[in-house]
Amino acid sequence: MRPWIEDIFAAQGVTEAVHSHGNQEGMDDTLKAVKSRRQKGLIFTNLVDFDMLYGHRNDPRGYAQALKTFDDWLPKLMAEMTSSDLLIITADHGNETTDVSTDHTREHVPLLVYGPAVRPGRDLGTRKTFADLGATVADLLDVPAPPVGSSFAPEIF
Image (cartoon, rainbow, N blue to C red; front, side, top):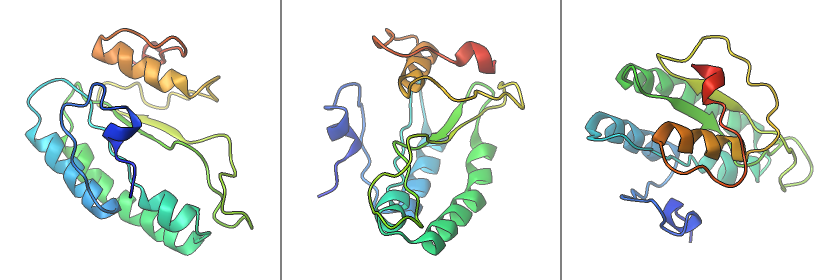
């Protein structure tokens, strides 16, 4: 059984959970959620195929095809974004698909931030902690900051 997002966060702050099966369904569900949103909030999508099907199974060709599929889909999402939307693309860990191990093999993960109001070309550098992402989301949603991490919102707007 897969851990669902609401399980990972102990259902705290989760108002709705949509269980998609696979990257494509997750991307389709994300686009539906963006198109039907009614209030300020967070849409959290876990494209688990990158990890389960390709990263941990050392499948660089499958991973590359999944990235291409995601890249081809991304403009559809970007076209639906409003002037106040922010898209953050990251991962929870790294997997080197050509490594002999099937474990997590990298400490650093990508952090890509896009939005109509984001200053273009901003390099966020290597963050001190992944908790900076949580602090940034809390900052942008005007909710209490977590005990660790620093918001990078002032750096991107």
